[in-house]
Image (cartoon, rainbow over all chains, first blue to last red):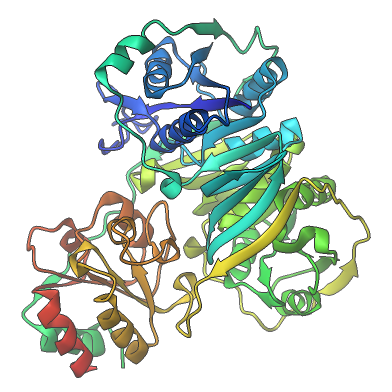
Length: 250
Length: 309
């Protein structure tokens, strides 16, 4: 089984990103960048499948500026075999990303494409579903467990009401939720080894994909601030306030 | 403007998320059709027809669309969408699963988690875990949106009289198959529909201590939630998680117990009308958003609270 795994370069999850002062977009100047946490979980899952002898090759793909190579190196250090960078300075939307990944699927013919369920910058939660539509493959989003069977996967999904189990035919697109696994830390020898693993570079144009954006960001602003209220002395005062001031309990 | 709303219904019951999505649709136009798909959807269709503001209910009664399985349902939505200016689904796990797939079939860039409608092509949505509100304008001919249901007051469930039409088209791909669901059974209200929520965090120390929250919840008719820290620590199951990657809630009263207030949790509950925080750390960030803060040991405060109610 050949696995393609997509990784996105995003602001590190510990950074509280704020809008630029002119509201033209998020302020990412001097912000530490990292691999999107959900993508990291997808890489870990792919590597585990390889370690179990189920996957034969794991190819890590990233789309974005030249610097996105760093996130491919992270995936290689975790255990992916080789990388592909689709280099562009256009701010890609999920549809554009899905089209590029579709073009790569046509070349690479993976049996399984693993992605994060969403990136923590745009919070779109669309790319996997869109790639599934464009390839015509089955999809399992929000995966918290993947079991590989004969020509199919059984996937447990984290849905609103609890956990849902579906069976999907291969080839398939799966997006990871938080509890799919806990990614390992890359060891120093593996980080060194990753530097020697090959990364191919291409562009949306070479893939024949038009990635011109369909949406325009008109404004980025802070959410309305919620004011801190008061501190109450004890439970009796709390209950009194809730009953008589806020009137939310009777 | 004509708008198609994808309904979410479980065993014949129309979910509240659908009514909130219809409310968002009303801000775009007054020709609002609701698609009810799946087997046994007569009751759901009936309820959709009664919801205020609905023009037509389209019923695709076929097991192929059960649980809104994405592969089949996206084909149906894509087929219908060509007659509409907007297609809206609630930003539930079902909506997020199927709507982007349908959008890609139509070569449309969907817009996720819409929290406000500015105009027919311009919308607001939270990005960066709610730290930034983005205003985005789309140039796509069909606008396909998922709607953050807590941001819109649901339309009344009664008072409408829409016509009901049956659809014949069946899209059956056999790509995926529903095997089952492990749904948390509870007599308490659902998190996303509850008027009162009491949530526990890492401070609860273990799953058994959540029993204290359940008892208070039963006195208040409340739902019980949890922070990601409590879920990751294995205290309770994931369906109880409130936060950016869990459920987004906005009840009249939200009581956070032993929750420090990580960004990811705040993003899921800060639109609640009244927030109460009980935490022994006076510097916990949760107090910055709480209307009423009680600095106290929860193991002392909870029994007192239970007794006082």
